[in-house]
Length: 251
Ligand code: 13P
Image 1 (spheres, helix red, strand yellow):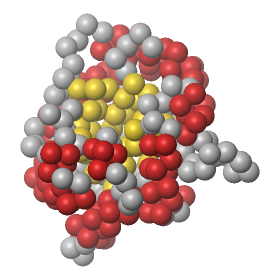
Image 2 (cartoon, helix red, strand yellow):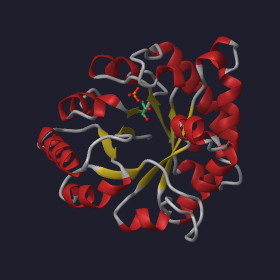
Image 3 (cartoon, helix red, strand yellow):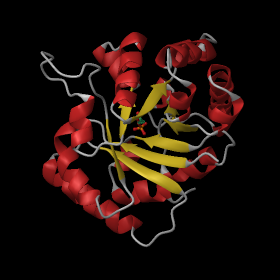
């Protein structure tokens, strides 16, 4: 059985004291609740170590928002998988559309990062998604297929089975314009079919496929009730403990 996983991508938000406050609030909001989903938060790099020490006695798990694909070396400004592991990261978000479009990350770089994450026992959360123009030109399926095939290139079936996929249509990110549950389900079912081809049916059926793009407390339940939507990658709504709690509790 696949797991529901709700992840909060803080993006470039929250300084150290704000991060401490948000994590403390979130722990309080989730304390004593019965959760049907795993909960992950992805704070900025500089807050990871502190956040890790604060979540040790909670159900919350830690992710990074990005990393480099090399082990170490002359890569000014970059962070390695081993560094992330040493501060408690169990997950890393890779190939977010903001990394692809603003920072020029290619499918090839993202694939190297996926391999590097596995080499360091970090679970990758691989993002994919089409732009508005691509959707309007009927290219959404083609774009997503390309991103997933390239991102998963040369992985073992067991590795494919151990990753998380996040479908985030670019036109729904930070816009308040969410994909309808039917639009999202259509893509998620397509992704699962593709994962079946790339691994096998049993493996694909156990992979968590998250939806991301303006997920809020008022739309989470409907999105998450779709058969192939197994979680959410939340941006804006994870920056407040009560709205993130409501999304977590909507499954
Ligand atoms: P929003 O929830 O702010 O639309 O962001 C989604 C996202 O990009 C999460 O990775």
